[in-house]
Image 1 (cartoon, rainbow, N blue to C red):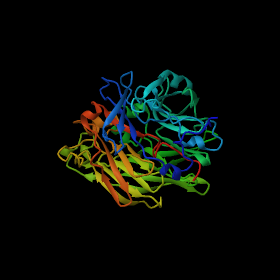
Image 2: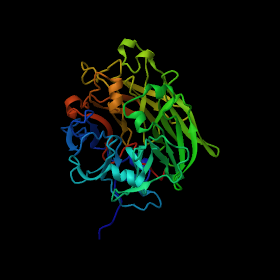
Image 3: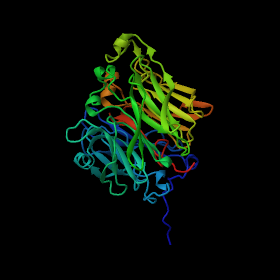
Image 4: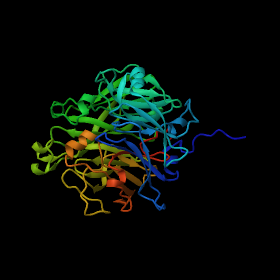
Length: 466
């Protein structure tokens, strides 16, 4: 008699995840800024023992134009092992891929042929609008009872509020709006949780009209982009507290809670301080009976000749770091911080989360420096480390260079290009893997954005056991 067992890529604890076999494939969302050809999911060989290591070995082209694929995720993950989960036997099989500009959501099956995933369902914009009241889906996270899909905009022509839609694990139908009581939350971006403590955290960017054409100087200097964290009761789906970081800290983006479910803290990246162009990382944590946040990392702007800067920042005579992504290793020891503007990826030891210690840095790309990859030292690169993904064991770090179409065009008006890199990360080493550098024509003219790793990665799963 066959046993009905959970997916072997679900892990009860971060420790179990870190000791699992390494990934052999990476899935990368790639989009066409001109919307003249379909966006796609590129499949890369990341097995160092393979003859095709570091190359694109498969494609899944989408059927429409102009989606602008963004932050996609797995349909199911280790949260399915949480006590009380109604779906303990779902599989990590489907990629749930939102189109930020089209408001479509694609369901892509990776099981039968992992290097040629198949589209099996498309959730159309009108279903998301009708059933949840949202548009512009941005980020997907797999929860024990369904798929959490954050969205920037409202429906039926309403710019906001943004929020979270919940999708069914099996049918992928939109169940409805997640929030029961939203409270003062209006702007949206990411959402994550302390799943064992029934707490959900959201961050803030802006509504579609505030972001779709790039950074709006008047809104930025007027301090109108998001600058707060919002905390919700995860079970009751009710807002419980807002923590304002100060309106000078504009655009609170990626959230990375501790993977150990006994730890009640996490990190949030802030793109820019409008007073000095620095960027920062904040730690949220419990403070008595409430939540608090404190700045634990500041990255200053770098002086530059105005003639070498794009028009959007030329008047400032400096390059802002622009922290646009962060990622926390599964063992909660290393925090990776991408400084897209200066072309730097920083690594911090956050064993003491209140006192991070910088423990490595690499340069590649950047608005001014255009630092090449070691594998191609004569090729100046645009873009910079943007989306960051870390393997479960923490030894491999993958970065891609495109942020968001309109931002790419503003900060790299001569073209952002297309490249992906991998770094080897151990306690005594943080260096580029010179064998891994797909770039240029490898991506068929598309811009690579987010990466997901076969079997899960550092930002896809949440765990209910320490």
